[in-house]
Image 1 (spheres, rainbow over the protein chains, first blue to last red):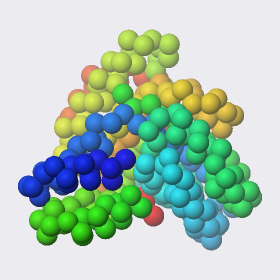
Image 2: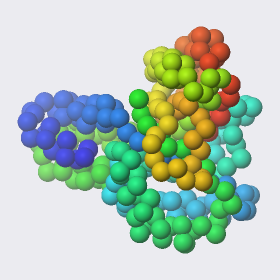
Image 3: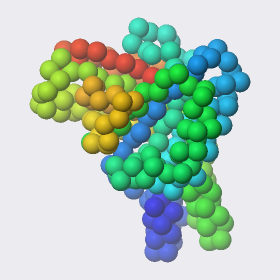
Length: 132
Length: 132
């Protein structure tokens, strides 16, 4: 969708700066569905298992309803009481809506991910957020 | 992947549009710090309190080190065992790095937010993620 909007904008504009500004503004305005998953590894101290799971999560990016994806690990921010630092891998995705999320959920690539990497994690917590 | 297609398209356009596209490319490639906060209200069933807190979280957007912010509430996705639906308000922010996050943490606008809206929540959980 970002690409389509870009092309529409590019077709109608001559000023380069305006072209660059358009997609960012559209992306910021659209209310999206945020899907944030945290994984706790069976071997929480294994960097190898962590990196393997990161690799696995990245295979999900091919699913066409994912608008944006961020894969991550624990950041080195200040350790405060409210900060949960017990997880190992984070999967953050943006969808257009719950339909897009459901398509992802049932997608063969997602099912293959669970089959191939599911042995690595002991626990998963999912947060599904509707932007307001 | 969307971005790559965008740049490929841009390359085929005039030099001006290609140059203008650069900042987006940098923004998209840069590994960011994801700061995701979930709030549990003292009155979890109060839509009024929820909306008030949403309003409060939105005041944070003025803090200059926040690169992108998404405020949200529970999405109506499928209720599975792994999905945590016990929270009420979500604050998702992107920073350039831990320094940007620390600046936010100590910022007067953030301190005012805690002072003015802190009575609304019973519990906060924070996830700080380093993109990989």
